[in-house]
Image (tube, rainbow, N blue to C red; front, side, top):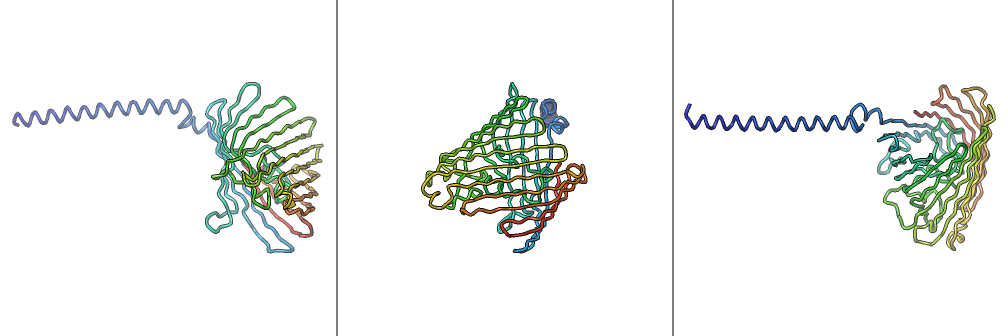
Length: 353
Protein backbone atom coordinates (compact mmCIF):
# COMPACT_ATOMS: atom_id res chain seq x y z
CA UNK A 1 0.00 0.00 0.00
CA UNK A 2 1.46 3.36 -0.98
CA UNK A 3 1.62 6.37 1.31
CA UNK A 4 -0.99 8.13 -0.83
CA UNK A 5 -3.36 5.19 -0.48
CA UNK A 6 -2.86 5.12 3.29
CA UNK A 7 -3.59 8.84 3.54
CA UNK A 8 -6.76 8.45 1.44
CA UNK A 9 -7.92 5.48 3.50
CA UNK A 10 -7.26 7.29 6.77
CA UNK A 11 -9.11 10.36 5.55
CA UNK A 12 -12.11 8.28 4.49
CA UNK A 13 -12.11 6.52 7.85
CA UNK A 14 -12.00 9.80 9.75
CA UNK A 15 -14.78 11.23 7.55
CA UNK A 16 -16.88 8.10 8.06
CA UNK A 17 -16.40 8.23 11.83
CA UNK A 18 -17.40 11.91 11.78
CA UNK A 19 -20.60 11.12 9.88
CA UNK A 20 -21.44 8.32 12.30
CA UNK A 21 -20.86 10.62 15.28
CA UNK A 22 -23.09 13.31 13.76
CA UNK A 23 -25.79 10.74 13.05
CA UNK A 24 -25.59 9.50 16.63
CA UNK A 25 -25.98 13.05 17.93
CA UNK A 26 -29.03 13.62 15.67
CA UNK A 27 -30.54 10.31 16.79
CA UNK A 28 -29.98 11.23 20.45
CA UNK A 29 -31.57 14.63 19.90
CA UNK A 30 -34.52 13.04 18.08
CA UNK A 31 -34.90 10.59 20.96
CA UNK A 32 -34.93 13.48 23.46
CA UNK A 33 -37.52 15.32 21.34
CA UNK A 34 -39.65 12.18 21.11
CA UNK A 35 -39.43 11.68 24.88
CA UNK A 36 -40.52 15.28 25.40
CA UNK A 37 -43.40 14.80 22.95
CA UNK A 38 -44.53 11.70 24.84
CA UNK A 39 -44.30 13.55 28.14
CA UNK A 40 -46.34 16.56 27.04
CA UNK A 41 -49.05 14.37 25.46
CA UNK A 42 -48.54 15.42 21.83
CA UNK A 43 -47.73 11.93 20.49
CA UNK A 44 -47.72 8.33 21.61
CA UNK A 45 -49.76 6.72 24.35
CA UNK A 46 -50.33 9.98 26.28
CA UNK A 47 -51.57 11.66 23.10
CA UNK A 48 -53.96 8.77 22.52
CA UNK A 49 -55.28 8.96 26.07
CA UNK A 50 -55.95 12.68 25.66
CA UNK A 51 -57.86 12.23 22.39
CA UNK A 52 -61.42 10.94 22.12
CA UNK A 53 -63.70 10.14 19.22
CA UNK A 54 -67.46 9.85 19.02
CA UNK A 55 -70.26 10.42 16.58
CA UNK A 56 -73.80 9.66 15.49
CA UNK A 57 -75.80 8.67 12.45
CA UNK A 58 -79.41 8.26 11.30
CA UNK A 59 -81.21 6.50 8.45
CA UNK A 60 -84.72 7.67 7.44
CA UNK A 61 -87.48 6.13 5.36
CA UNK A 62 -90.21 8.64 4.40
CA UNK A 63 -93.44 7.23 2.96
CA UNK A 64 -95.23 10.30 1.57
CA UNK A 65 -98.91 10.38 0.68
CA UNK A 66 -98.55 13.30 -1.76
CA UNK A 67 -95.06 12.67 -3.08
CA UNK A 68 -92.39 10.11 -3.82
CA UNK A 69 -91.23 7.74 -1.11
CA UNK A 70 -87.62 8.25 -0.09
CA UNK A 71 -84.92 6.46 1.87
CA UNK A 72 -81.92 8.48 2.98
CA UNK A 73 -78.93 8.04 5.25
CA UNK A 74 -79.49 11.56 6.46
CA UNK A 75 -76.39 12.13 8.58
CA UNK A 76 -73.09 10.44 9.43
CA UNK A 77 -71.07 12.42 11.97
CA UNK A 78 -67.66 11.99 13.58
CA UNK A 79 -66.44 13.87 16.68
CA UNK A 80 -62.69 14.22 17.29
CA UNK A 81 -61.72 15.95 20.54
CA UNK A 82 -58.33 16.48 22.15
CA UNK A 83 -57.37 17.71 25.60
CA UNK A 84 -54.12 19.66 25.51
CA UNK A 85 -54.11 20.24 29.27
CA UNK A 86 -56.46 20.30 32.23
CA UNK A 87 -57.79 23.67 31.02
CA UNK A 88 -57.41 23.70 27.24
CA UNK A 89 -59.27 21.40 24.84
CA UNK A 90 -60.21 21.15 21.17
CA UNK A 91 -63.69 20.06 20.06
CA UNK A 92 -64.46 19.24 16.43
CA UNK A 93 -67.27 17.67 14.41
CA UNK A 94 -67.16 16.42 10.82
CA UNK A 95 -70.38 15.55 9.00
CA UNK A 96 -71.48 13.89 5.77
CA UNK A 97 -75.11 14.60 4.88
CA UNK A 98 -77.23 12.42 2.57
CA UNK A 99 -74.55 9.76 2.11
CA UNK A 100 -73.02 11.09 -1.12
CA UNK A 101 -71.40 14.49 -1.73
CA UNK A 102 -69.89 16.04 -4.84
CA UNK A 103 -70.88 17.81 -8.03
CA UNK A 104 -74.57 17.16 -8.69
CA UNK A 105 -74.89 14.88 -5.66
CA UNK A 106 -77.50 15.42 -2.90
CA UNK A 107 -75.13 15.54 0.07
CA UNK A 108 -72.61 17.86 1.66
CA UNK A 109 -69.41 17.41 3.62
CA UNK A 110 -69.37 19.90 6.48
CA UNK A 111 -67.22 21.04 9.36
CA UNK A 112 -69.88 21.65 12.01
CA UNK A 113 -67.66 22.40 15.00
CA UNK A 114 -63.97 23.25 15.46
CA UNK A 115 -63.17 25.36 18.48
CA UNK A 116 -60.69 25.69 21.32
CA UNK A 117 -62.25 25.76 24.80
CA UNK A 118 -60.38 27.22 27.77
CA UNK A 119 -61.58 26.62 31.33
CA UNK A 120 -61.23 29.69 33.55
CA UNK A 121 -61.64 30.36 37.25
CA UNK A 122 -65.07 30.45 38.88
CA UNK A 123 -66.76 27.96 36.55
CA UNK A 124 -66.36 30.18 33.48
CA UNK A 125 -65.13 28.96 30.10
CA UNK A 126 -64.02 30.76 26.93
CA UNK A 127 -64.14 29.38 23.40
CA UNK A 128 -62.90 30.54 20.02
CA UNK A 129 -63.50 29.03 16.60
CA UNK A 130 -66.49 27.48 14.87
CA UNK A 131 -69.32 26.39 17.19
CA UNK A 132 -73.05 25.71 17.49
CA UNK A 133 -75.11 28.65 18.70
CA UNK A 134 -76.92 28.48 22.08
CA UNK A 135 -80.48 28.65 20.74
CA UNK A 136 -83.53 26.35 20.71
CA UNK A 137 -83.87 22.80 22.02
CA UNK A 138 -81.90 20.86 19.39
CA UNK A 139 -79.17 23.10 18.01
CA UNK A 140 -76.47 22.03 20.45
CA UNK A 141 -77.76 18.52 21.27
CA UNK A 142 -79.34 16.73 18.32
CA UNK A 143 -78.11 13.14 18.40
CA UNK A 144 -81.05 10.98 17.21
CA UNK A 145 -81.31 8.96 20.44
CA UNK A 146 -81.94 12.16 22.45
CA UNK A 147 -85.24 13.30 20.88
CA UNK A 148 -88.55 11.95 19.63
CA UNK A 149 -89.55 11.85 15.97
CA UNK A 150 -87.74 10.66 12.87
CA UNK A 151 -87.30 14.18 11.51
CA UNK A 152 -86.43 17.22 13.62
CA UNK A 153 -89.34 19.48 14.52
CA UNK A 154 -90.31 22.01 11.81
CA UNK A 155 -89.82 25.11 13.99
CA UNK A 156 -86.15 24.26 14.41
CA UNK A 157 -85.80 23.85 10.69
CA UNK A 158 -87.66 26.87 9.36
CA UNK A 159 -87.47 29.49 12.13
CA UNK A 160 -84.34 28.48 14.05
CA UNK A 161 -82.22 27.07 11.21
CA UNK A 162 -80.93 24.01 13.08
CA UNK A 163 -78.24 22.88 12.68
CA UNK A 164 -76.79 26.41 12.92
CA UNK A 165 -73.13 27.15 13.52
CA UNK A 166 -71.03 30.29 13.18
CA UNK A 167 -67.44 31.38 13.91
CA UNK A 168 -66.47 33.72 16.71
CA UNK A 169 -65.86 34.01 20.44
CA UNK A 170 -68.02 32.68 23.26
CA UNK A 171 -68.14 32.90 27.03
CA UNK A 172 -70.10 30.62 29.38
CA UNK A 173 -70.56 30.39 33.12
CA UNK A 174 -72.70 28.58 35.66
CA UNK A 175 -73.78 28.38 39.27
CA UNK A 176 -75.65 25.55 40.96
CA UNK A 177 -78.92 26.24 39.13
CA UNK A 178 -78.16 28.99 36.61
CA UNK A 179 -76.12 28.91 33.42
CA UNK A 180 -75.42 31.72 30.97
CA UNK A 181 -73.89 31.85 27.48
CA UNK A 182 -72.94 34.81 25.31
CA UNK A 183 -71.21 34.82 21.91
CA UNK A 184 -70.10 37.31 19.27
CA UNK A 185 -69.91 35.63 15.90
CA UNK A 186 -70.42 35.72 12.16
CA UNK A 187 -73.95 36.51 11.03
CA UNK A 188 -76.57 35.32 8.58
CA UNK A 189 -76.69 36.57 5.01
CA UNK A 190 -80.26 36.03 3.84
CA UNK A 191 -81.34 36.15 0.16
CA UNK A 192 -83.98 38.52 -1.23
CA UNK A 193 -86.73 36.17 -0.06
CA UNK A 194 -85.55 36.54 3.57
CA UNK A 195 -85.61 32.79 4.01
CA UNK A 196 -83.79 32.35 7.31
CA UNK A 197 -82.47 28.85 6.60
CA UNK A 198 -80.85 30.01 3.37
CA UNK A 199 -79.00 32.70 5.32
CA UNK A 200 -76.62 30.17 6.88
CA UNK A 201 -73.24 30.42 5.12
CA UNK A 202 -71.58 27.78 7.33
CA UNK A 203 -68.35 29.77 7.65
CA UNK A 204 -67.33 28.85 4.10
CA UNK A 205 -65.76 32.04 2.71
CA UNK A 206 -68.81 33.70 4.25
CA UNK A 207 -69.47 37.45 4.07
CA UNK A 208 -68.26 39.21 7.21
CA UNK A 209 -69.63 42.72 6.82
CA UNK A 210 -71.95 42.43 9.80
CA UNK A 211 -71.54 40.29 12.91
CA UNK A 212 -74.18 39.08 15.36
CA UNK A 213 -74.41 38.56 19.11
CA UNK A 214 -76.31 35.72 20.83
CA UNK A 215 -77.10 35.18 24.49
CA UNK A 216 -78.95 32.62 26.60
CA UNK A 217 -79.83 32.17 30.27
CA UNK A 218 -80.87 28.71 31.55
CA UNK A 219 -82.37 27.76 34.90
CA UNK A 220 -82.50 24.11 36.04
CA UNK A 221 -84.10 22.60 39.12
CA UNK A 222 -86.56 19.98 40.42
CA UNK A 223 -86.65 18.03 37.16
CA UNK A 224 -87.28 20.94 34.82
CA UNK A 225 -85.26 23.36 32.76
CA UNK A 226 -86.30 26.70 31.29
CA UNK A 227 -84.22 28.95 29.07
CA UNK A 228 -84.52 32.27 27.30
CA UNK A 229 -82.35 33.21 24.33
CA UNK A 230 -81.91 36.17 21.99
CA UNK A 231 -79.84 37.22 19.00
CA UNK A 232 -79.29 40.59 17.35
CA UNK A 233 -77.73 41.43 13.98
CA UNK A 234 -77.73 45.00 12.69
CA UNK A 235 -77.92 43.87 9.05
CA UNK A 236 -79.08 40.36 8.25
CA UNK A 237 -78.38 40.97 4.52
CA UNK A 238 -74.68 41.77 5.08
CA UNK A 239 -74.89 45.25 3.60
CA UNK A 240 -77.49 44.81 0.87
CA UNK A 241 -80.73 46.10 2.43
CA UNK A 242 -79.71 47.38 5.86
CA UNK A 243 -82.22 45.11 7.61
CA UNK A 244 -81.68 44.70 11.35
CA UNK A 245 -82.96 41.44 12.83
CA UNK A 246 -83.79 40.25 16.34
CA UNK A 247 -84.47 36.66 17.31
CA UNK A 248 -86.03 35.91 20.70
CA UNK A 249 -87.22 32.62 22.16
CA UNK A 250 -87.76 30.39 25.15
CA UNK A 251 -87.65 26.66 25.83
CA UNK A 252 -89.13 24.31 28.43
CA UNK A 253 -88.06 20.78 29.35
CA UNK A 254 -89.98 19.28 32.30
CA UNK A 255 -89.46 15.72 33.53
CA UNK A 256 -92.06 14.26 35.91
CA UNK A 257 -91.23 10.60 36.28
CA UNK A 258 -92.22 8.78 33.09
CA UNK A 259 -93.93 11.90 31.73
CA UNK A 260 -91.93 14.58 29.90
CA UNK A 261 -93.03 17.88 28.40
CA UNK A 262 -90.90 19.87 25.97
CA UNK A 263 -91.76 23.14 24.31
CA UNK A 264 -90.32 26.00 22.30
CA UNK A 265 -91.47 29.44 21.17
CA UNK A 266 -89.40 31.68 18.94
CA UNK A 267 -89.78 34.67 16.61
CA UNK A 268 -87.84 36.94 14.28
CA UNK A 269 -88.46 40.68 13.91
CA UNK A 270 -86.75 41.90 10.73
CA UNK A 271 -86.48 45.59 9.90
CA UNK A 272 -86.27 47.37 6.58
CA UNK A 273 -88.71 48.11 3.79
CA UNK A 274 -87.61 45.15 1.65
CA UNK A 275 -88.47 42.56 4.32
CA UNK A 276 -91.84 44.21 4.95
CA UNK A 277 -92.60 44.30 1.22
CA UNK A 278 -91.78 40.59 0.96
CA UNK A 279 -94.10 39.83 3.89
CA UNK A 280 -91.16 38.28 5.72
CA UNK A 281 -90.56 40.86 8.46
CA UNK A 282 -92.23 38.67 11.09
CA UNK A 283 -91.39 34.96 11.21
CA UNK A 284 -92.35 32.86 14.21
CA UNK A 285 -93.08 29.38 15.45
CA UNK A 286 -93.76 27.20 18.47
CA UNK A 287 -94.27 23.58 19.42
CA UNK A 288 -95.41 21.60 22.43
CA UNK A 289 -94.44 17.95 22.85
CA UNK A 290 -95.68 15.65 25.64
CA UNK A 291 -94.15 12.18 25.83
CA UNK A 292 -94.49 9.16 28.09
CA UNK A 293 -92.03 6.34 28.81
CA UNK A 294 -93.99 3.07 28.88
CA UNK A 295 -90.79 1.34 30.02
CA UNK A 296 -87.08 2.09 30.13
CA UNK A 297 -86.86 1.14 26.44
CA UNK A 298 -90.17 2.31 24.96
CA UNK A 299 -91.69 5.78 24.72
CA UNK A 300 -94.58 7.44 22.90
CA UNK A 301 -95.06 11.10 22.02
CA UNK A 302 -97.31 13.64 20.35
CA UNK A 303 -96.25 17.04 19.04
CA UNK A 304 -98.17 20.05 17.78
CA UNK A 305 -96.20 22.73 15.95
CA UNK A 306 -97.22 25.92 14.17
CA UNK A 307 -95.00 28.35 12.30
CA UNK A 308 -95.04 31.27 9.88
CA UNK A 309 -91.98 31.46 7.65
CA UNK A 310 -90.65 33.86 4.98
CA UNK A 311 -93.61 33.14 2.68
CA UNK A 312 -96.05 34.69 5.16
CA UNK A 313 -98.03 31.44 5.23
CA UNK A 314 -98.88 29.67 8.48
CA UNK A 315 -98.42 25.89 8.70
CA UNK A 316 -99.59 23.60 11.47
CA UNK A 317 -97.94 20.20 11.93
CA UNK A 318 -99.18 17.27 14.00
CA UNK A 319 -96.84 14.36 14.73
CA UNK A 320 -97.42 11.22 16.82
CA UNK A 321 -95.06 8.31 17.18
CA UNK A 322 -92.93 5.91 19.16
CA UNK A 323 -89.25 5.49 20.05
CA UNK A 324 -87.68 2.16 21.01
CA UNK A 325 -84.19 2.03 22.58
CA UNK A 326 -82.80 -1.54 22.64
CA UNK A 327 -79.84 0.04 24.48
CA UNK A 328 -79.32 3.62 25.60
CA UNK A 329 -77.43 4.88 22.52
CA UNK A 330 -79.39 3.10 19.76
CA UNK A 331 -82.95 4.03 18.81
CA UNK A 332 -85.63 2.84 16.37
CA UNK A 333 -88.34 5.37 15.52
CA UNK A 334 -91.72 5.45 13.81
CA UNK A 335 -94.17 8.33 13.44
CA UNK A 336 -97.14 9.70 11.55
CA UNK A 337 -96.83 13.31 10.40
CA UNK A 338 -99.49 15.67 9.05
CA UNK A 339 -98.01 18.98 7.83
CA UNK A 340 -100.86 21.18 6.65
CA UNK A 341 -102.66 18.23 5.07
CA UNK A 342 -99.55 16.60 3.60
CA UNK A 343 -99.33 13.24 5.36
CA UNK A 344 -96.42 10.85 5.74
CA UNK A 345 -95.31 7.81 7.72
CA UNK A 346 -91.66 7.90 8.72
CA UNK A 347 -89.34 5.17 9.97
CA UNK A 348 -85.83 5.66 11.27
CA UNK A 349 -82.88 4.15 13.08
CA UNK A 350 -80.17 6.16 14.81
CA UNK A 351 -77.22 5.84 17.13
CA UNK A 352 -74.61 7.85 19.00
CA UNK A 353 -71.36 6.90 20.69
